[in-house]
Image (cartoon, rainbow, N blue to C red; front, side):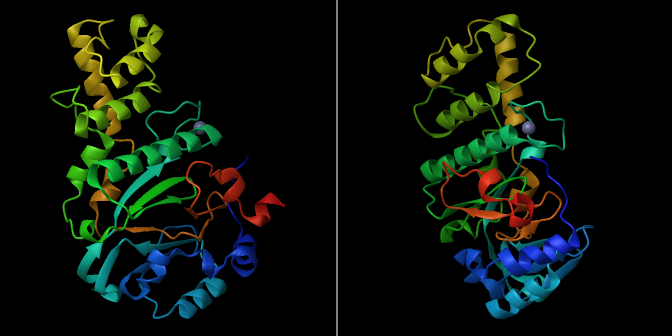
Length: 300
Ligand SMILES: [Zn+2]
């Protein structure tokens, strides 16, 4: 499939005929008055900021008239969203962009996407969700297809007040090598899982021994076998673990997670650059963006 930019006419067609306020997730509707909205009207970035809406009707009218190139809302809740002041709390978010994935199974050059790297991005998003749920006991975790990747959005009330999000980011993405690699649960377990994701896709592995035994290494590590990397010497082993952790740290965009005043693409809006719909995902396992996030003007 070709990811072509939407024309102004196509944008109007989308917002007039296809876009429905019912596709808007409750977690935004319920906090509409507390959020800052931002819009990109011409493809040059979200320059129309500090927008607020008092009702869903106002918002609906705005979208239908403007048919924006891109639409965003703050992850933050403010007492004064029109001034981005008096911050109350913010969702915790993870931004996984398929075009920037550091490891992938396809041959896409940087900046491009295909069916395979979109699938890789989803697998990563689901791994992050799994970790948030099992390690942090979070329950209100949502998956959104962003148009070129995925957003994981956490709305558990107690998590929204955390101001320093770097620890949770580092934990969930497994961005450092644990002291003990073989603990049954907790961070060690998460590291092993993320190691499997990254190591199975890593390129530029020089050691032939490693390449030949890649699957076996992953299998052994997931089974907590201390000899999992005994195909190579100690320093190579350390190098590989460190390398994987470094890649993990860049799998999602940490800047987005840490920034508690970020604006994020609005679910239901059109990602005009690639003509795909930013979509709230309900069927996590079976969701296929190439079937479910393509606007009618592109599929007809
Ligand atoms: Zn690709």
